Image (cartoon, rainbow, N blue to C red; front, top):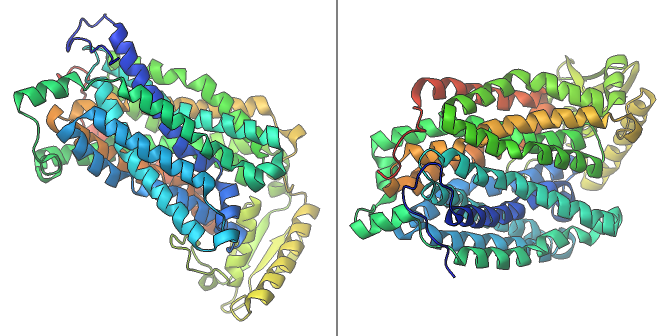
Length: 555
């Protein structure tokens, strides 16, 4: 039976059963889509071993992050494709298409053979499936936000759409729970060998549930009204982007709203988890449990800030979140290191590490196509230290000299792999890594965080603060975007800036930050990326974007 559609403009205090059904159906389906999408990010380290095993460990992990980012890279194209479809034929039908594409793509990742089985075809197919996921997600969010907002009573759009905003975090939370459950049930060895596929295969069940739920929905009342009046757009892309009046708002929505929102979101969830596991070497189970607990505590605040935006406005809450995050990221991440791995922090102070190298011998180790081989002595030394989560200082060596690593009073010479064949390079690298590992251990650098030394209470508190920043910037963003654009081109116009902001500015944050850390030697240097983007959004949003909470969206 189809859902009951509430009146177009009910009393602001009225919340009908039809409204609740619309919010629940839209939100639950979107949770499942985010679950599918986030599985890859949560399992990036294992996927690197399964599908990029031909590369060295550091390059494999970077490439796995890039494959994750590939899903984000195509999201704007999904926004254009499905945004146009949503404005032409309706929100509901677009919902169904995106969920089917997402569910099937995720299921296929679960049955995809590894690199060891089919060679280079494995990572190629994996990236293709990630791109299909990104296309589907590019069409999902704008439809869900538009659909709920067009059902919402006047004065409650921030509250209603904030439930959609919880779905990304709930999807991540669900993926973490399923992964942890499988890991604990199977054991670490079996999970890394084959058990990691189970969460992907479960998406088939979620797909059936999601399709059933969305079949119960009717079309958006504002879209039906517009269609019956014959006023719908015949060319949504042209009206959205070729018209400077609307195109200017699209550009400002990107740079003055979604770019900052995106980097605060991904820094507070994905990069924080990456920092705990890859830099601080906290075991994955502990890190995921701490992040899951922070999400449980913080998630209700999406709704709190959505509700508050109906009273004080979308703009002040979002821009305040960006500004506070930018001002506090460095001390918060430094505190995470202090409470998460105090032995690493102590070793960095008592036995500082220095890479002594010819600057011409050092590369910026960011390779989006995976064709470069970083085999110079400086690159090898820095790659090994970045993988170990060790902060180091750079010192200039004479031109043409071999790079070396100084750990306290111990000096380890790197190697030049350019003249070595593959076997000799592998053997020489293993010897260098063993010598460097021994020197770091002697200087007190821990290979992993000591579970007994982790102050879990303080780490959790810091993660909750980061999640609260996320809720500030993300809770009201859907209402703000919906209200910036007219009904006839709303789906298309709001989807593109959202997905460029979140797909590109946010999605490439982990990869960019990791490369910045490897280049600079400072484990906090990658934070400059979200800080500068957030500050740009504060300035542009404050100067050029309007407050919209009282606008009439039926226009």
